[in-house]
Length: 179
Image 1 (cartoon, rainbow, N blue to C red):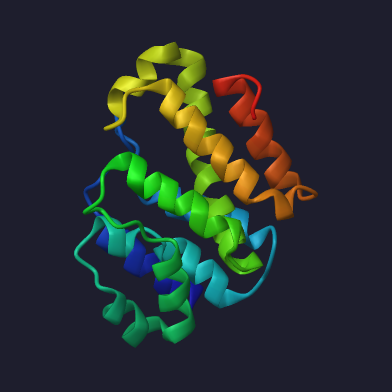
Image 2 (image 1 turned 90 degrees about the horizontal axis):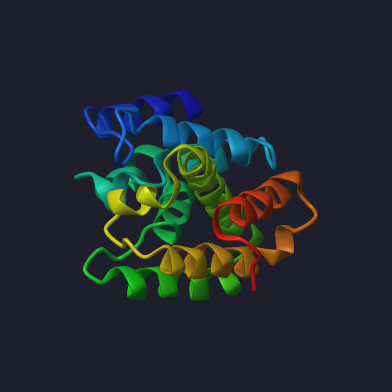
């Protein structure tokens, strides 16, 4: 299942790149899956990490995920999918609120996604400084800080795990002290 999900995600994201870079987008879900595998060897969780952006960012539907990978994987992916009809702040606020009461497995998927994003952001921030925010739709660093520190608060249940601690360290590197 994991190999099939990796191939499916690679095809769905083919030709796309991380914002402001020439890094193939597939590296992000691959890294998210690697992070999730640090919590569990559950193939459905790892597959969901690989597929977490295909509904949100490609032409793939939730129904296609369900048919190909089963109901649980489709549900996990749906829980990690933002409503792109909303503005940035509404989407991010909804994500934070959702994660506060989400089950542990959803929080693990979210940490895989957000830690991968923070690794990339922190690396580029160290090189570009505040210029990095120009590559995003939301260009205000304070808004990104609000979002990533909100995620940290929502995922507090995972605070004993090394990956959560890494996430906090990277947030401090990029945004300074948190809330």
